[in-house]
Length: 379
Image (cartoon, rainbow, N blue to C red; front, side, top):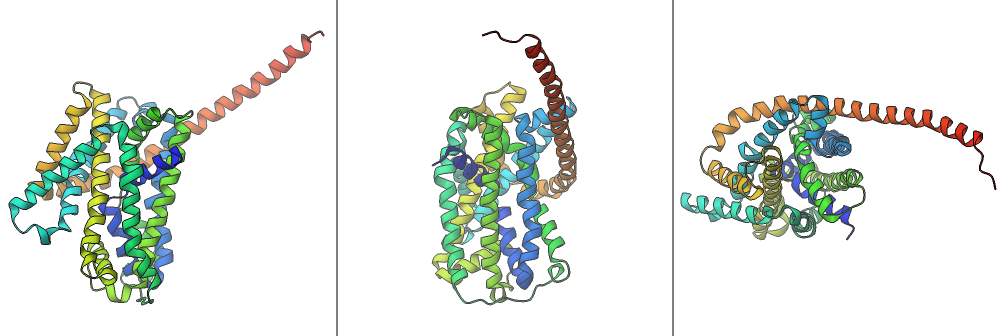
């Protein structure tokens, strides 16, 4: 398989977690007959913006380098805050709690749930312990497994009879703008700031000739996959929206859709989809956070940071996740617009540098031509 495609699947696997998994089915069912305009809005903020963010960051190598170009003190401060919020404070513990919520029917006792959380983080730690190998785990194994499981649920729905309901709520009056807002809620634009560091490490290990171009190409492949999966989930659930509107959230909708096509096995199938998606994101976030803190602060090794973040994630998932989400979610929503402004400024600097370089080339070319004419080569 092409190395850049493997990197693209790796990046897709790190982006596509439980939060992303529930938005598209929920949008499909609520939008119903208005699914296409709603989906168009969602794809702009949940796919185009994160991919564009990585492409803007690519010339700088990492987001920290880009922000430091704007303001040196701002780079480590902003990125440390982002890594902590989408890492051990919110996303890392939430991956475990969301994945295991789908298996509650198998975990009746509280001690069983705690054991399951630590087992989940043990597996995620094993996946992330060698960051250079994570591209092989996610890009060649876990990513394709996730895609295959999603196809098992969606293809029978697409092949089955159509039962589309009318759109409900805000989707009935402003489907495009509602979809735009739904996609923004994934906050993948912040994840784009963080994932570049791990993909850059993988590119170095693979010894690709143009690292910055390879990062941008990997982002484009990830965008294609994200777009395809969002469309598949939204359209397949919209086709059965009349029978699925009774369910209140995307997790319930996806589980009901799986049971509708596969019977009791559908519950296991939907549980596996959430488990694989959450393991992918958790291992990716653990690796990215550990790599960033190792490079930025340098006091501890990558494995020391990895152990710390793994334990913090497990303990938070077992105890204080709700209290942290109550304030950190608001903080994340405030940081997102700041990230957009930083990207615009970063793009401006890139274009400015290219313009200055082109101007310099234009000045050099006539001088070179003049020198050659004054000193002709004699034969």
